[in-house]
Structures are given as C-alpha cells and as structure tokens.
Length: 295
Ligand code: GLN
Image 1: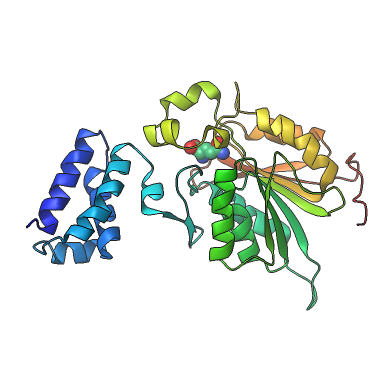
Image 2 (image 1 turned 180 degrees about the horizontal axis):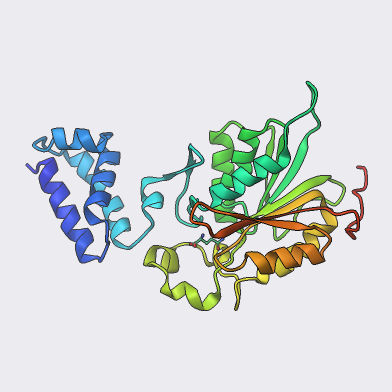
C-alpha cells in the first residue's frame, strides 16, 4: 500500500530528474487533479492510501509531464481573463500577455448605444484555444466571431471552448489560412495573436514551448514579423473598423508602422511590464480597402 505523500515524493523526484524547475508544485497539481483535492487538502490527506485506479489515472499524466508537455496540457485547462479554457496537445496555451490585447480591444469597441445595438463582427485569425474571440464575445454581447485556424488540431480546441462557454450562436470556428471568411460577410475587426517569435530564438525557449507547443503558433520567420507583413494587407481589405495584434517584445513600432502605411493609423499599448504588447489601428479616411459588399 502506497500513501499519497509517498507518491508525491516519488513524482517530485522523477520531475526533478527530468529537469523540471517547478517539480514539487507540478507534482502537487497533477496529484490534486487526479484526486480532486486542492493543495491544502492534499496536505491534510498525506497518509491516505492511494487506490490502484487512482495510480493508473496518475501514471500517464506524470509520464507526459516528464516529457515536458506544458502543465496546462497535462491538467487540460488554462485560465484566461478569469475563465477556464480547455487545452491539450496541438494548441498554444493562452498567455497572460494576451489579456492586454483583450483589455485594449474592449476599450476600443466602446459602449453600445440603444437597446438593440448593432453587432460587431470580429475575425480572430489563428484562434488556437479560442481564448481571444470567446473572451471578446463574453465581455461584449454585440460581438460575433469568426474564429479561424489553419491547424485542425488547434481548431478542435476552439470548438470545445465555444461549446464550453455556450457561444455556438455567436462564435463560428473556421478551418483555413489567414482571413478565411467568405467575401460577402462583413468584418468590422480583424484581431490576431499571430506567431511572432524569430525562428532562431525558438530553440532557446523553455522545452515546453520549444519542443512541444505548435511551431505554427510560434514561428514568425527570420525577424518574427512575417505574419504581420502577410496579414496586414489582407486585413486592410476587409476590416471596416480596426485591426488589432498582439506583438512580441521590440516589435510594436514596426507593426505600428505597417498598420499606418496600410491606412490604419495605429497606437501601441503596453502590458503591465511596460512592454509594447498590443497594437491597434483604426481605419483612417484614406484606407484603401473596399467597403464590404452587401450579401
Ligand atoms: N507569447 C508567446 C511566447 O512568448 C508567443 C506567442 C506567439 O508567437 N504569438 O511564448
């Protein structure tokens, strides 16, 4: 008979051998998930014997974490903007950085006028877990979202989270590259957290990111700006109101300049560490895009 504290200790040692910096915490969280206990309750149950079915549930999770899968994949959920999102192999884990984009976008959307305000059509390119589009829809009842991802695996998580947050009537999941929304559909806002890490920098990131998270969601080409260069002309043709991006450290000015040149005069918004993290451009009077064709 093996007790909870013995399992905790063995798991911690195993994680340490795998070079995981937060070995004990991760062991507690995974064990807590399997047993349905928070960390305080784990401590109060140290001498509790572990049943075989519990150990069988635990083993594959411990093995996956030992292979440096992100904790969020192993636990199956990640909190973003105060809500839980389902995540797992094949999808980028939501980052707190991206909450800056959400806050600034909600401010940019402004407040609704009248009792039956017009819908705001948002295209979220590279939706991944769906955290951006879904959060915008939950924060602003006018928002209707096209959540687009080129990766079928990632889009499965978008779908799961649409379901989880009961948004099937306001958020549509579309598999495709770039702005894969039928041409006749109105789009007010194009938003995206595109891949922006310079290719050569990826290998230097922690193994969970460098080896596990999808390259499609991370790799932004030689200087990290490839996707902005590709998406801005496409978005400028369609976005009736604005274009908003998350950017990596040191990229905000370049992305602002690209948006300005495309006819979307843009502003840089800093995150809590003072890093330019979101860039939001509003369609200027001289923007070259055509007004949407009525369906
Ligand atoms: N913020 C992520 C990271 O630094 C990168 C996500 C992205 O490329 N959009 O790991």
